[in-house]
Amino acid sequence: MSQNSKRNRILIAGNWKMNPITREEAKRIAKSVKSVASKLDKTDVVMCPPFTYISSIVPSRSGVAGGNVYYGAQDTYTEIQGSFTGEVSAEILKELGCSYVIVGHSERRKMGETDTIVSAKASAVLRAGMKPIVCVGEEVRDSQGGYLDIVSAQVKSSLESITDRRLASKLVIAYEPIWAIGAKEAMAPASIQEMTIFIRKTLADIYGQEVAVVVPILYGGAVNGRNAQDIVVQGEVDGLLVGRESVNPPGFKELLKAVDLRK
Ligand code: PGA
Image (cartoon, rainbow, N blue to C red):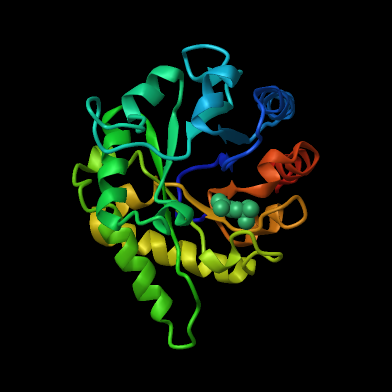
């Protein structure tokens, strides 16, 4: 856990992306995650399936199953309701039992989502009473350290419309270097630790230290059962955003157990 953070639980968010392709398989994955998660002591788990599976895996309208399992979506829209064909609002997601919504994932940014849109979506999620997991991360690493400016600018403009500190304290930031997403190797824990400190400092510049210490900072990109514990402990992150391994029950089980067994 980050020394700067007041949190002592670790949050593991599974971004299922556009997987699996049947509802039965989605239910099977969720069942397996719930059964492992119920045995964890110090770890919270969020499952973010495609929209259409949410109601099939949420057990009740409370959005909380067994205390440490939560549900989330992978995207939302900036408005609450109305003529926006194909969109799903934060209010609708809340009603389905979601507590978290990923916003600004690099795969969505690649489809044209700007920091301004990400900020409006994050704000809509907060207003609906949920927590946005705001994704940031550089595309490449340059030897001059230009990636630091890119990440701080991205954090600032992706949060631009969130000025209320009380709401800001409900944010979650996911640092996902784009070059590590879907890659073989995750970023080295020491570099992750540097970025965690840097992002927390950026949050402190925007909202002050009090808010900065309570906002969980997650790492994402090629996390698996073998590297998860080192990333959490040495990288001093408050959690992980997991892609591929979150829809692979044996791998996700190993990952959750490794994180929960941290010292
Ligand atoms: P990955 O994806 O774990 O498959 O690298 C991470 C993400 O896109 O959030």
